[in-house]
Amino acid sequence: MSEVLCLVQDLIRRPSVTPDDAGCQDLLAERLRAVGFACETLASGGVTNLWARRGSTGPLLVFAGHTDVVPTGPLERWRFPPFEPTVADGRLYGRGAADMKSSIAAFVVAAEEFVAAHSQHAGSIGLLITSDEEGPATDGTVKVVEALAARGERLDYCIVGEPTSVDTLGDTLKNGRRGSLSGCLTVQGIQGHVAYPHLARNPVHEVAPAIAELATHRWDEGNEYFPPTTFQISNFHAGTGATNVVPGTAQIDFNFRYSTASTPEGLKAAVCAVLDRHGVQYTIDWKLNGEPFLTPKGALSDALVDAIDAELSVRAVLSTTGGTSDGRFIARISREVVEFGPLNATIHQLDENIPVDTLEPLKNVYRRTLERLLLARTS
Image 1: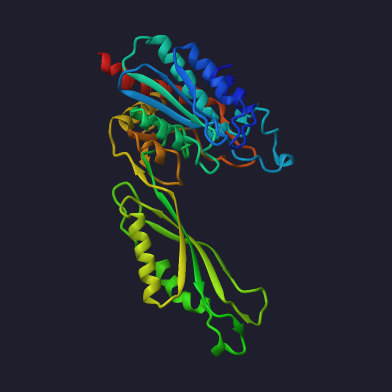
Image 2: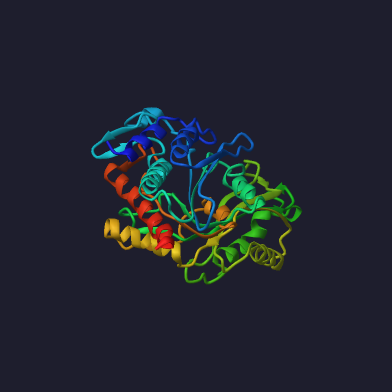
């Protein structure tokens, strides 16, 4: 049995439902210390974070990931118990198999193999592991980034092990993610009897033309890496439940997934301009869930693309699709951030699994990337 498979099975056995690390990071730290990493726990708000580094010079290449997993859902609907890793039909089943304990196991074994072969390598290797990625993400990677920034540690390259592959291992890298801006719009009306509309003011009727305009508005044109910004309404609440009452208020929840072609301030101003133009009486509570980040094509993406090609004979493409990730925090202190990991077909699902035969190639891609970015410095 391969080292990667053994390690990911050990990690899956630990029921690390967010934000509980369940001892995963202790296991990782024990292995990393054995090959010369200095490991420290950076805890915050009940969340466990691991920062491990081998070396003190640049360039610093960091592998980043999370040990926490989403809840299992109904246990009786799993083919195998979610925290009892099971290999069947060529696949490894278990919660976190794809998102993202396989990546973390591949990180560690790749680092072990690289150090064993190149103990005097140039630069430094780091691992940034949190147990608060699947939750609110307020005490995880963002806190480690703040701590590293406060003491002047900056990253040159960071590989986030999110499951980015779509159809085959290595087909997709994420070199950026869209930002997420949410708003809760409350529209003021006057409640009344539906038979006496002249004594009431219906907020649904008043906001409807504005919503129609917001839904069709072109916010930006995107750019080379990002599609245009999108606006979506997720919830619309109004009324008392009675059929003969004009509602007094309406509440609309909406979200922007925005590119680097827009800013939160610009989007807020544009929404207010539409509502004002339609004479709507309103308030908006805004929440910035995540800022966009972008790493243009460069040394890290080139190294990963070449490593994938050499290992898998697949030519990866760069993408910025999907939701947010911890890359948005790491980009504050890292020159280049790229996400690469296993197939994402079963993430967060019942019977989450990963093809066993992708584990060794995944580890090899990470090791080859280390070789390309650190060994080249000594040649």
